Every structure is written in structure tokens, then in C-alpha cells.
Image (cartoon, rainbow, N blue to C red; front, side, top):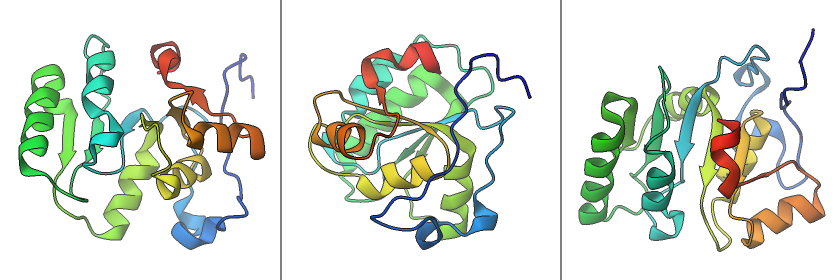
Length: 171
């Protein structure tokens, strides 16, 4: 197959946890033809996810048929959730999907498997399980360059993690 220089991520094992811990082999359906267009932003309602900054960065991006998923059920803050929902819906309309309720695990895995782009705009150590899951599923993962999580995956494990400031170049 001719990749024409386009990076196509493949699933990897990571010593912290095996790929079968979260996802069984049949769950990892990497589509090398690029049919994983959706975007997931953050892992929880924590302010540390810098959701508003990410929404602002993406607001003028033409989504086409893509969806933007935002997990907001974990550690909910009702006022912040309402603000994020209002902002996301005003920028992206029906393409913005706030996940305000806990989902059955298989539904969550289906959503994660549809997201070829994962944005964790965190500056402290958090969302490690989500970052690992996204990497195992072959997503392009975007982190803040100055975060310890970015440095951990880049320097210790040599994963290809993308710098958040360049997100519009890759999506």
C-alpha cells in the first residue's frame, strides 16, 4: 500500500499495561485507510484538561462529518459542564458530543476506537490510562509540550506524541 508519506499509527504494547487490559484483540480495529476521523478532547471534567483552550483552537476548523467527543461524566462540576456544552455546541453544533453520563464500557470502547485524534491539553500528570489507550488504538495523541506526560512518553518510551500547538497541521 502506498502511504504517500502519511503517518499511519499502529497499535503498540506498553509495559505499564498490556493491550488486553483495556481492549481485547478484537476491539483493536485499526483502519489504515483513515476512517477514524473523530476527535476526543480530555479525559474528565477537570479544569486541568484545558477544554476551553482546545475548543478555541479548533473553532474555525472545518469538521466535515467528524465528531468531537468530550468526556464530562468523571468528576463532574455542573457549572463547568454547562459552560463546555454551551461553548462546544455554539462552535460545532451537532458535531459536538459531550459525554455527560457514564457509558457502558463497550460503548466507550466503540467511541475511543472511532477517534483517530486524541487531545489531552494537560500540563500535569493525569489521563495516563486514556493516553495509553489512545496510543494502543493507533490514534495521534496531542499533548502540551511542557507537560510531564509528554516528556514521559517522548523521552522514556520514544512514542510519537504530537505537540498540541501543531494540531491543525495534522487533523
